[in-house]
Length: 173
Ligand code: HEC
Image 1 (cartoon, rainbow, N blue to C red):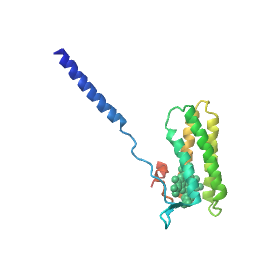
Image 2: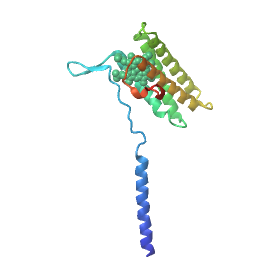
Image 3: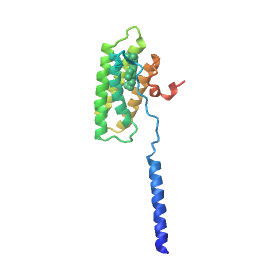
Image 4: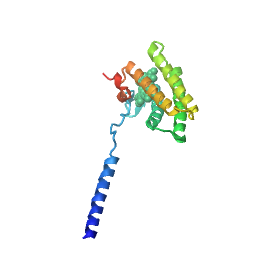
């Protein structure tokens, strides 16, 4: 009798455990970010062609996604700080390219937001240099938010809807 009871307990135990692990595995955030693509068009041959600016944006996007992916962590390990360091350097490089090669002198807000993005990326790099300081993680997270805000501001300013969920909540209509 005892043996059967024990067995029953084991079975229900396993069942609960399995159920619990499945529930745990279900991702909380199903919303994948859509790929931008408005600025790339299919040519006559069917090949996708992007403007040079769009290609640079894709690079900017790649680096932004890398820092965003770790921005929710409560602590950053050596590897995470390396990502911050490398990605902010890349962001600086590509933003400088946008400023120098794709200026829009007639659009002062565009010009200004590019400079803002450069400045924000430079601050993030600076934070990475002070990673040992108290509050460095929070500073980096804050900075990543500022960067996102700048991406969104410019896309919004230009009426680009390639990347709607880059827009901070308060900017949604
Ligand atoms: C100062 C303006 C400006 C800022 C800041 C800016 N973008 Fe853009 N972005 C553009 C413009 C303009 C285009 C459209 C390019 C085209 O049509 O050739 C674009 C296009 C894109 C695209 C679509 C590329 C494709 O596949 O066609 C992505 C993705 C993107 N930006 C991501 C970002 C991210 C991420 C940031 C911030 C880290 C950012 N952008 C900051 C102006 C900006």
